[in-house]
Image 1 (cartoon, protein in one colour):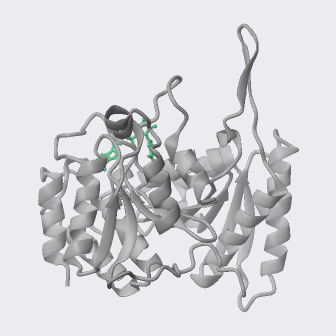
Image 2 (tube, rainbow, N blue to C red):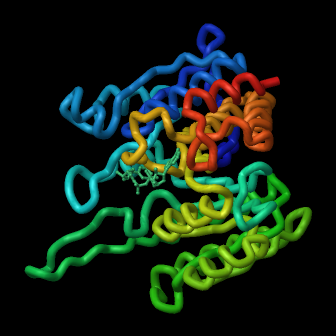
Image 3 (cartoon, rainbow, N blue to C red):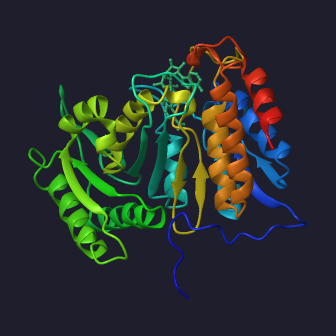
Length: 353
Ligand code: NAI
């Protein structure tokens, strides 16, 4: 049997008419925006058996561990999760649970589609970028140690295996979605071996994709120049292919081009599973205030519905979100409005057709 490509619709069968999905409300604004996403999926009429599980700081507080066994068991069983952001402390505390969860299902491809919405005012119109970020290695391998007092080393791990598969994912995504170009973003002028290997792998995959039914242009750009270009002429990019750390940074930059972190969804795909989550974090400054923008979480849920074989419902949700943003009457503060999370969610549900 042919292996499914990462991101291919799931082969999960519904039980009793309902697909099982692990639901991780998360920390900070997580429970608020995830509540919004679940309400919209329910209103769209898709039957899902949510298996709610704690993770991160919420789990540490209630269960004494940020990564409970029950969460891992649920994830291994459902192989699909809708996840809120999880807190990871700066410079101290436990290692990222996000990284751990992605590794549990080997979700090597992080996909972040970043599009302009009419009604959301930014210096750019018609931005349509797709960030493809390698999710399993690079400086996120977490190999850090103190060599001597005052000297620490952090190891950047780049392998041909991971670089080839993320490059294939980017090109396969481009082919299936009729995208025009893939740009590999790197710093191989300085990190000649590690980023050099990443580029070598991207080039070899690009060569293979030259022979498909239509040409996908392959380009390369050094990360610093790419950042400058993104904020002056985002239309010169299409699909961006990046290692883990550059991907993390550049996707927030791209979010800034289309109205901020409140509107950009994301998915982590592997060969046989996926976790859907917004690009944003726990937003501690607005947590618990019913002020977070629920759009990123709702659009992540729409991506999940596509993955679960409900593309029409995913599209209906996206259209409802587009409608509310275009009309501009019910917007959260980050978009210049005064609506609460629940008011904006209710407006999106009303706009569902
Ligand atoms: P953040 O994304 O939480 O917040 C950055 C800024 O964006 C804040 O001003 C926040 O209010 C705003 N913002 C974020 N989401 C928003 C929304 N839905 N609506 C309106 N405004 C929103 O990033 P920060 O502050 O760097 O990280 C906070 C925590 O989140 C950290 O512990 C970090 O590790 C974690 N984090 C978790 C992620 C995940 O679970 N996937 C991803 C990124 C960060």
